[in-house]
Amino acid sequence: MKSLGIRAVSFAVLVGLSLPALAQPTLTKPEDVGLSSAKLALIHDAVKVQIAVGQIPGAIVLVARDGRVVYLEAQGVTNIVSKEPLKASHIFGAADLTKTVASVAAMMLVEDRKLNLDDPVSRFIPEFGGPRQVRVLKPGSPPAPFRAIPGPGAPSTAWGEPEYEMAPAARPITVRMLLTHTSGIQIYGVDNSFPPREPTDTLATFVPKLASIPLEFQPGSRWAYSNSVGIEVVARVVEVAAGMNFRQFLRQQLFGPLGMSDTDFGVERDSTARALPYAPGLAPPIAGEVTSLSGSAGLWTTVGDLSLFARMLANKGSFGGRQYLKPETVKQMASNQIGPLVMAGYPPMGMPAEGLKFGLGFLSVTIPDVAGTRLPVGSFGWDGGGSRRFWVLPDDGIVIVSMVPLIGPQAAPLQRTIEATVMNSIVHR
Image (cartoon, rainbow, N blue to C red; front, side, top):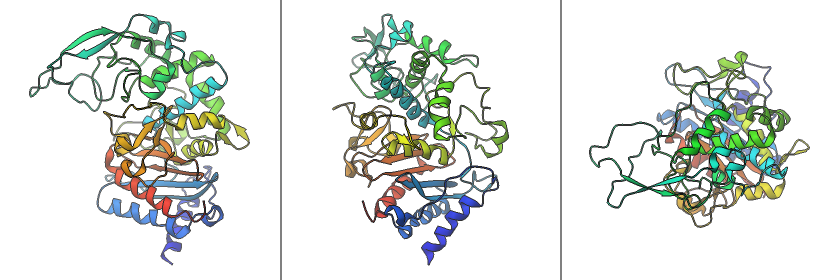
């Protein structure tokens, strides 16, 4: 009876929202798609425990199979100060999940033959055609100090500041390198003195400034997460190839057709009460007023909207009778595109990198036991700020989406438990 009670909570959360006009997914009985209601209900307990011990303030979890949502529940509060109940309708800053959307946009244009993965970026952004320098640590020099957010920081008194030599880039940066984080442009946690983005900057004015900054390694020679600017370059390539700005393309080709009505570069004015700020007192940007569009971390979305995007990918690029990507393109994006390179220098989704590989915009599970997850080989997805994420399990047709109202790795233990619980709930494959 306990599981039935929890199941009822899930339905109550879905239909008892204070904003009844919002479109929310209709829940399907898990058994109708080969999952166990009783076992999925254990997600409730997992979230409840993490809230009780103070690991997280709350969480929203959605599970879908074969395109149908079978579990959706919000628990806890938006933050421990206000104690506002967390709801499935809350809008989150998508953070790095924006990168997956930008990657899909680029691959849609690859399919339309408006760009090629091996095109040099200079084909679309001429400034990238000039000579490029790679900075290399001098022998015996201390490494660059880690900074969670690249930018100016205090000198390291313990190690001393790193010293570099410059070497010419051996090859141009390509679109493929940007999508696989092998370009060498601005890697996570390292200050490369890249130019600040001014409030008046657009992708068209900001991205060309990145053409002159030194690279952290020879293009194509390493994997290192380009947290802040690599996918900004992709977004600008999309604009040039599509002949429209990044927001227009996404709204016309993805958000509108998929029904992602709460996803945009900012939040609609009449929806700001549902938006969770990145930090207390930091108001969300207003949709339509944002000029500095970001392919790296600019989107705002809901669990329900993000699930539409993920369900499209789980259904081999098709959803609601429309084909967004070819099945072979989705498979390519979700498979190892970095060969023997190791995903070093960044903790992907709070998991050991040795059991993971990177595709075109997505993380892919290759050795579950080593990666510390119960997800099967071939599962793919990505993470935003350590607390917004989704997984697609293509062979099982399953999607897992979760959002926690904080930024950081605190949600990682819960994520691993959710993954295991969903796998244990499978009755029929």
